[in-house]
Length: 76
Image (cartoon, rainbow, N blue to C red; front, side, top):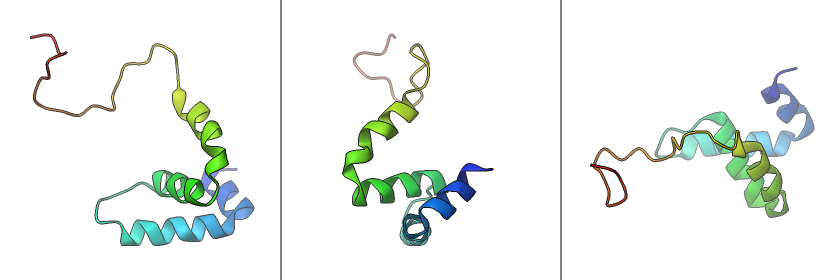
């Protein structure tokens, strides 16, 4: 089964809250991001599971920084 279906079946209230957050968000969010945010608001003890899931490979390139201007640590 798909992840979205599992989440909806196993945690319907979190799924509904995630959909509401998607509608209320001033910036575009993916359903996955909204669901994770909503889940952590109600269950902060699950942070370790989300960190483990989002860690990915040990030597993956850092794609979280989207700055167009170089910083002091960027090579020229």
